[in-house]
Image (cartoon, rainbow over all chains, first blue to last red; front, side, top):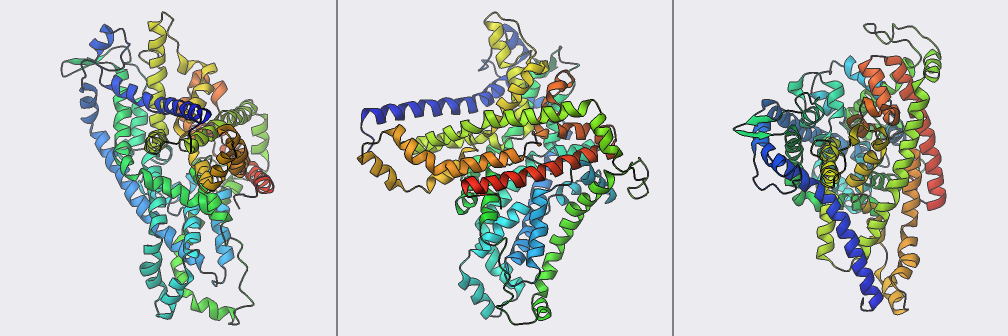
Length: 290
Length: 335
């Protein structure tokens, strides 16, 4: 089909442009990786112009990974991502199922209560005051409870359930299934793809959040990984000028920071290739139906 | 998140789907079912029971804070005394806000940064999406898409780290380049005239790939026979873009544009909080960062709440207005 010269030129032009954009998306990461593996000596020797280190050193990583705080924070991040997402899915699918029942008296009011919170939020301080009143300051549960229901997700799943073939729900009713049985045996398995997509986005959200932890937690032992990384990255560089000597090789504070960035990206990069298509599918599922 | 966020492509897509879908305003089936209301409620009691935890969440974590916002903004909340013992002060907080010297700057910065984000961040994903759509290679295209989506999944902390790696004085890539070409190293991160370009550039880096998805989703519904017919009729790639591709994404484009305008007062506080420092404050301080600093660092709860409330009310009005125009122009709104 695309045979003529103008077609070929066009294809070449867009391929070149897209490849350039993709390179600029990926290159910064590779540069960060290179820096994190470069020691002080090589940096000086090559006049700071290093993209690929000739004598890579893992000293910066060794220094970071011996910090017990990093491992603790990794655990906290896993906790909030797993428990936060699990509970959120549970409540969200229950809410969606209830609101998908068209004959339910009061349904429109309940639905309005959910939708309105998407459009109007109370703001940072009142939310903080509520967390304080509940005694959840300095508790990791604040990071879970605040996101217990995803209003957007609830609406998506509600529509998903409403769009299921009528026969399925009807058949369940005729068989005398209770509401709970319907939910567990019919709705949840059928809505699984939508739930998976919302769950994945929630996990990424929890994994990447740091601001809420900074607001609601005081004890560094409870900080999630992103907040620890943030503190390492923005730490006042009082020692910025002198290099640190670790296991005999000197590394610059910059290399330390770059190693911090890589440590922060690794978990995401490790799961991304396997989950990428589900993320994209999730957005498509939303977008195409609308 | 207690701080309102700009809608990402993903999220807007989801909202659209969610709310333009069927039944937000489903007609009540009143006349159809002849059973009495009480009987219908009884029949569904399990459902109400199931809904209790969901309702409790919304009341405690959404509506209680909204109520507090309206109370605290009109009170002088002192440390140590509870919300309800604190004295009412009427509109004093709002007067203080608009008489304070930093608020006009903060509001101006917020709007300027939002508009800059929109102007610089709006077209690139559309262009990229069209190029992806037109690429004739299958496997290469998929690989490139996979790679360009990656930064979306990084936290702002990571993005800040990458920016630091690029612009720091000591060994940032840009400074190394400058130095090796004989120029002086420059403190980009402490230069207020570089703050906004770096802020917006790094946000574009993070989201350009992912933002294409909403457009690609719209393009995936275009009948490929249209393109085939156009080729047979002798339409070149640019003609096809103009007459098929662009018209097919126009509704989505207007939709995204209007919705972004609705979030004018949310300039992306989470990112700015990481990127800014005292040296660039005059160009960087926005409502979200001001509320965080004054409210939680200086414990000016009432003032910060009042500013937050102002932001939410104006924000709601803007979203409602923009949604109205989105619907009018593109036939598609958030609700």
